[in-house]
Length: 308
Image (tube, rainbow, N blue to C red; front, top):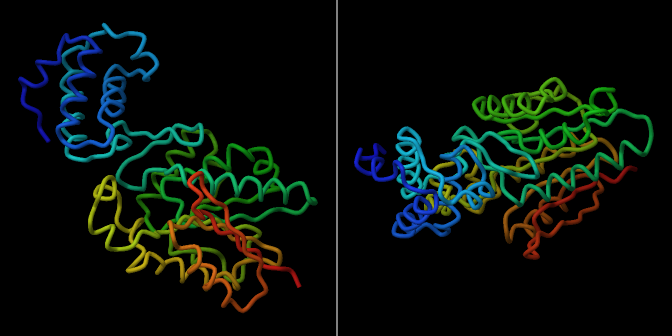
């Protein structure tokens, strides 16, 4: 949206505290669920600073170009565009990750999936001297891959761990590559483009498969509430019940999990029982557990292929 010149002009020379108040009022009138926080984030970004700096510099003023940019951001946020896309990054899992409309914005729930993956890899590396083979499906912008590469940089460099991240979207993989590069771990992670585990070499099996698949029911995607209206539909739409892609992924596990291998899947609220039933029908012995989020919702499914 093009912001009228007078709107930007009214912000030029205004103190930071007044900028925040004006932005919060505009966002409140537009129905933002967090107008004050949104305003602080955008004003701080206009100063190229963080919120802590903003709080301690309430009388700082903006130059004309920054005021124009801030006006544009406020109007775009008022129309619903996510803060992470406006700023171009998301702070997640103590990382700063580039974000744009090529991929989903990293969610707090995915930190649970990442923590579970870290624990699984660490346990396997401590077990013996074998190389641990890990494949992450639907990597999106690469949040999980970056976190794992940074945590296990030494193991990846020494060949004790092999990590591949894949996605159906080549554009999402471009963002993954950018995030890996900006964190200095691009050479440690292999990238592959394709549906689920199709890009993996035929007959290959993995010690750990990580998946954050599209699991939002189509009706919610169609409603387009919040950031769902702006994020790539392909990464959200899980079909009528949200489980279309999950079904295909679970069905492929017998061919892809090594004996003793583990699959970790992030799921939506209320989907745990359905995924348990899918896993129970697999033609292999399994053990299944779940990880709950802070709200007590089963958020990560852990499927173990029990070694014969």
